[in-house]
Length: 270
Image (cartoon, rainbow, N blue to C red; front, side, top):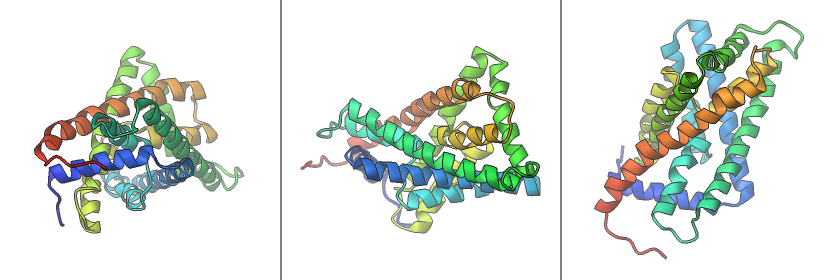
Protein backbone atom coordinates (compact mmCIF):
# COMPACT_ATOMS: atom_id res chain seq x y z
CA UNK A 1 0.00 0.00 0.00
CA UNK A 2 3.07 2.26 -0.41
CA UNK A 3 3.29 3.02 3.30
CA UNK A 4 5.12 6.17 4.36
CA UNK A 5 7.27 6.17 7.47
CA UNK A 6 5.96 8.21 10.44
CA UNK A 7 8.64 10.87 10.02
CA UNK A 8 7.42 11.35 6.45
CA UNK A 9 3.68 11.56 7.06
CA UNK A 10 4.07 13.76 10.14
CA UNK A 11 5.97 16.22 7.93
CA UNK A 12 2.98 16.07 5.57
CA UNK A 13 0.70 16.87 8.51
CA UNK A 14 2.66 20.03 9.31
CA UNK A 15 2.76 21.04 5.64
CA UNK A 16 -1.00 20.50 5.34
CA UNK A 17 -1.65 22.61 8.43
CA UNK A 18 0.44 25.45 7.03
CA UNK A 19 -1.31 25.28 3.64
CA UNK A 20 -4.75 25.48 5.25
CA UNK A 21 -3.82 28.64 7.16
CA UNK A 22 -3.02 30.50 3.94
CA UNK A 23 -5.87 29.14 1.84
CA UNK A 24 -8.26 31.74 0.42
CA UNK A 25 -11.56 32.31 2.21
CA UNK A 26 -13.65 31.13 -0.75
CA UNK A 27 -11.81 27.82 -0.94
CA UNK A 28 -11.98 27.29 2.83
CA UNK A 29 -15.75 27.84 2.87
CA UNK A 30 -16.40 25.65 -0.19
CA UNK A 31 -14.28 22.79 1.13
CA UNK A 32 -15.85 23.08 4.56
CA UNK A 33 -19.35 23.18 3.06
CA UNK A 34 -18.85 20.06 0.99
CA UNK A 35 -17.27 18.20 3.91
CA UNK A 36 -20.22 19.01 6.19
CA UNK A 37 -22.74 17.99 3.53
CA UNK A 38 -21.05 14.69 2.65
CA UNK A 39 -20.57 13.74 6.31
CA UNK A 40 -24.26 14.47 6.96
CA UNK A 41 -25.28 12.18 4.10
CA UNK A 42 -23.02 9.48 5.53
CA UNK A 43 -24.83 9.80 8.87
CA UNK A 44 -28.19 9.31 7.14
CA UNK A 45 -26.72 6.33 5.29
CA UNK A 46 -25.47 4.71 8.51
CA UNK A 47 -28.67 5.39 10.48
CA UNK A 48 -30.77 4.01 7.62
CA UNK A 49 -28.69 0.81 7.57
CA UNK A 50 -28.98 0.46 11.35
CA UNK A 51 -32.76 0.99 11.35
CA UNK A 52 -33.46 -1.30 8.40
CA UNK A 53 -31.17 -4.15 9.46
CA UNK A 54 -31.26 -3.76 13.23
CA UNK A 55 -27.45 -4.01 13.20
CA UNK A 56 -25.58 -1.07 14.73
CA UNK A 57 -22.21 -2.60 13.87
CA UNK A 58 -23.16 -2.79 10.19
CA UNK A 59 -24.13 0.89 10.16
CA UNK A 60 -20.85 1.79 11.86
CA UNK A 61 -18.85 -0.41 9.49
CA UNK A 62 -20.24 1.43 6.45
CA UNK A 63 -20.32 4.99 7.84
CA UNK A 64 -16.64 5.64 6.95
CA UNK A 65 -17.55 5.66 3.24
CA UNK A 66 -18.56 9.32 3.63
CA UNK A 67 -15.39 10.27 5.52
CA UNK A 68 -13.26 8.56 2.88
CA UNK A 69 -15.03 10.36 0.04
CA UNK A 70 -14.69 13.81 1.54
CA UNK A 71 -10.99 13.47 2.34
CA UNK A 72 -10.14 11.91 -1.00
CA UNK A 73 -11.82 14.97 -2.59
CA UNK A 74 -9.66 17.32 -0.48
CA UNK A 75 -12.49 18.75 1.65
CA UNK A 76 -11.99 19.81 5.28
CA UNK A 77 -13.70 19.02 8.57
CA UNK A 78 -13.31 21.20 11.63
CA UNK A 79 -12.05 18.20 13.59
CA UNK A 80 -9.17 17.81 11.14
CA UNK A 81 -8.01 21.43 11.20
CA UNK A 82 -8.15 21.36 15.02
CA UNK A 83 -5.17 18.99 14.78
CA UNK A 84 -3.22 20.06 11.70
CA UNK A 85 -3.08 23.85 11.90
CA UNK A 86 -1.57 24.14 15.42
CA UNK A 87 1.28 21.87 14.32
CA UNK A 88 2.36 24.46 11.76
CA UNK A 89 2.49 27.04 14.57
CA UNK A 90 4.49 24.71 16.82
CA UNK A 91 6.86 24.11 13.91
CA UNK A 92 7.34 27.89 13.68
CA UNK A 93 6.25 28.12 10.07
CA UNK A 94 6.57 31.73 8.82
CA UNK A 95 3.35 33.73 9.10
CA UNK A 96 1.44 31.10 11.07
CA UNK A 97 -0.03 32.79 14.14
CA UNK A 98 -2.66 31.84 16.70
CA UNK A 99 -5.12 34.50 15.45
CA UNK A 100 -4.82 33.11 11.91
CA UNK A 101 -5.43 29.60 13.23
CA UNK A 102 -8.60 30.73 15.04
CA UNK A 103 -9.84 32.54 11.92
CA UNK A 104 -9.28 29.38 9.88
CA UNK A 105 -11.21 27.33 12.42
CA UNK A 106 -14.09 29.80 12.21
CA UNK A 107 -14.22 29.66 8.41
CA UNK A 108 -14.06 25.87 8.27
CA UNK A 109 -16.68 25.59 11.02
CA UNK A 110 -18.99 27.97 9.15
CA UNK A 111 -18.61 25.95 5.96
CA UNK A 112 -19.24 22.68 7.81
CA UNK A 113 -22.35 24.11 9.48
CA UNK A 114 -23.82 25.44 6.24
CA UNK A 115 -23.24 22.11 4.49
CA UNK A 116 -24.71 20.11 7.36
CA UNK A 117 -27.73 22.45 7.60
CA UNK A 118 -28.38 22.17 3.87
CA UNK A 119 -28.58 18.38 4.13
CA UNK A 120 -30.65 18.65 7.34
CA UNK A 121 -33.28 20.72 5.52
CA UNK A 122 -33.27 18.34 2.56
CA UNK A 123 -33.62 15.29 4.81
CA UNK A 124 -36.41 16.88 6.87
CA UNK A 125 -38.37 17.29 3.64
CA UNK A 126 -37.40 13.79 2.49
CA UNK A 127 -38.46 12.08 5.74
CA UNK A 128 -41.89 13.79 5.77
CA UNK A 129 -42.85 14.13 2.09
CA UNK A 130 -42.50 17.89 2.39
CA UNK A 131 -43.97 17.91 5.95
CA UNK A 132 -47.18 16.28 4.68
CA UNK A 133 -46.90 12.82 6.27
CA UNK A 134 -45.70 11.33 9.54
CA UNK A 135 -41.95 11.20 10.09
CA UNK A 136 -40.30 8.10 8.64
CA UNK A 137 -38.70 5.51 10.89
CA UNK A 138 -35.22 6.81 10.11
CA UNK A 139 -36.34 10.37 10.87
CA UNK A 140 -37.74 9.24 14.21
CA UNK A 141 -34.42 7.59 15.03
CA UNK A 142 -32.61 10.88 14.36
CA UNK A 143 -35.04 12.92 16.47
CA UNK A 144 -34.72 10.46 19.36
CA UNK A 145 -30.94 10.65 19.13
CA UNK A 146 -31.11 14.42 19.52
CA UNK A 147 -33.14 14.12 22.70
CA UNK A 148 -30.97 11.43 24.27
CA UNK A 149 -27.76 13.30 23.54
CA UNK A 150 -28.87 16.67 24.92
CA UNK A 151 -31.55 16.29 27.58
CA UNK A 152 -30.06 12.91 28.47
CA UNK A 153 -26.78 14.57 29.43
CA UNK A 154 -28.52 17.59 30.99
CA UNK A 155 -30.22 15.34 33.53
CA UNK A 156 -26.79 14.55 35.00
CA UNK A 157 -25.67 18.17 35.31
CA UNK A 158 -21.92 18.76 35.49
CA UNK A 159 -21.29 15.02 35.21
CA UNK A 160 -23.16 14.97 31.90
CA UNK A 161 -21.17 17.96 30.60
CA UNK A 162 -17.86 16.31 31.52
CA UNK A 163 -18.99 13.06 29.90
CA UNK A 164 -19.71 14.98 26.69
CA UNK A 165 -16.25 16.53 26.85
CA UNK A 166 -14.64 13.11 27.30
CA UNK A 167 -16.64 11.58 24.45
CA UNK A 168 -15.69 14.54 22.27
CA UNK A 169 -12.02 14.01 23.12
CA UNK A 170 -12.20 10.28 22.39
CA UNK A 171 -14.03 11.01 19.15
CA UNK A 172 -11.36 13.26 17.73
CA UNK A 173 -8.61 10.95 18.89
CA UNK A 174 -10.09 8.44 16.45
CA UNK A 175 -11.20 10.92 13.77
CA UNK A 176 -7.83 12.67 13.68
CA UNK A 177 -6.17 9.28 13.23
CA UNK A 178 -8.45 8.93 10.23
CA UNK A 179 -7.24 12.31 8.93
CA UNK A 180 -3.64 11.18 9.38
CA UNK A 181 -4.55 7.88 7.74
CA UNK A 182 -5.16 9.74 4.48
CA UNK A 183 -1.48 10.74 4.55
CA UNK A 184 0.26 7.48 5.36
CA UNK A 185 -0.14 5.93 1.92
CA UNK A 186 0.29 7.07 -1.67
CA UNK A 187 -2.42 4.74 -3.01
CA UNK A 188 -6.19 5.14 -2.82
CA UNK A 189 -6.81 1.66 -1.28
CA UNK A 190 -4.12 2.32 1.31
CA UNK A 191 -5.59 5.68 2.26
CA UNK A 192 -9.13 4.29 2.50
CA UNK A 193 -8.14 1.34 4.70
CA UNK A 194 -6.15 3.58 7.04
CA UNK A 195 -9.05 6.06 7.31
CA UNK A 196 -11.73 3.41 7.67
CA UNK A 197 -10.55 1.71 10.86
CA UNK A 198 -10.60 4.58 13.41
CA UNK A 199 -13.74 6.15 11.93
CA UNK A 200 -15.65 2.91 12.37
CA UNK A 201 -14.51 2.76 16.00
CA UNK A 202 -15.66 6.32 16.76
CA UNK A 203 -19.08 5.86 15.19
CA UNK A 204 -19.88 2.48 16.75
CA UNK A 205 -18.87 3.61 20.24
CA UNK A 206 -21.13 6.66 20.02
CA UNK A 207 -18.48 9.32 20.61
CA UNK A 208 -19.41 12.96 19.98
CA UNK A 209 -18.34 14.65 16.71
CA UNK A 210 -19.00 18.39 16.44
CA UNK A 211 -19.75 18.36 12.69
CA UNK A 212 -21.96 15.26 12.84
CA UNK A 213 -23.90 17.06 15.58
CA UNK A 214 -24.30 20.16 13.39
CA UNK A 215 -26.49 17.91 11.26
CA UNK A 216 -28.16 15.57 13.75
CA UNK A 217 -29.48 18.10 16.20
CA UNK A 218 -30.86 20.79 13.84
CA UNK A 219 -32.58 17.97 11.93
CA UNK A 220 -33.94 16.59 15.19
CA UNK A 221 -35.39 20.03 16.02
CA UNK A 222 -37.01 20.26 12.58
CA UNK A 223 -38.59 16.84 13.12
CA UNK A 224 -40.06 17.76 16.49
CA UNK A 225 -37.42 16.47 18.88
CA UNK A 226 -38.21 17.45 22.46
CA UNK A 227 -35.16 19.54 23.21
CA UNK A 228 -34.32 23.21 22.63
CA UNK A 229 -31.68 25.05 20.64
CA UNK A 230 -30.11 26.06 23.94
CA UNK A 231 -30.00 22.41 25.03
CA UNK A 232 -28.19 21.54 21.80
CA UNK A 233 -25.63 24.34 22.07
CA UNK A 234 -24.81 24.09 25.80
CA UNK A 235 -25.50 20.41 26.42
CA UNK A 236 -23.79 19.08 23.34
CA UNK A 237 -22.03 21.35 20.86
CA UNK A 238 -19.87 23.40 23.26
CA UNK A 239 -18.43 20.50 25.31
CA UNK A 240 -18.10 18.43 22.15
CA UNK A 241 -16.08 21.12 20.36
CA UNK A 242 -13.80 21.60 23.37
CA UNK A 243 -13.34 17.84 23.66
CA UNK A 244 -12.64 17.52 19.93
CA UNK A 245 -9.91 20.17 20.19
CA UNK A 246 -8.23 18.66 23.25
CA UNK A 247 -8.51 15.02 22.20
CA UNK A 248 -7.37 15.44 18.63
CA UNK A 249 -4.48 17.75 19.40
CA UNK A 250 -3.24 16.07 22.59
CA UNK A 251 -3.73 12.41 21.67
CA UNK A 252 -2.85 12.53 17.96
CA UNK A 253 -1.25 15.77 16.80
CA UNK A 254 1.17 16.46 19.65
CA UNK A 255 2.11 12.84 20.23
CA UNK A 256 3.02 12.23 16.60
CA UNK A 257 4.77 15.59 16.24
CA UNK A 258 6.79 15.35 19.46
CA UNK A 259 8.17 11.89 18.77
CA UNK A 260 8.51 11.73 14.98
CA UNK A 261 9.49 15.21 13.81
CA UNK A 262 12.75 14.98 15.77
CA UNK A 263 13.69 11.75 14.01
CA UNK A 264 13.61 13.22 10.50
CA UNK A 265 16.42 15.18 8.86
CA UNK A 266 16.22 18.93 9.27
CA UNK A 267 14.72 20.55 6.17
CA UNK A 268 15.53 23.95 4.80
CA UNK A 269 12.27 25.91 4.63
CA UNK A 270 11.95 28.43 1.82
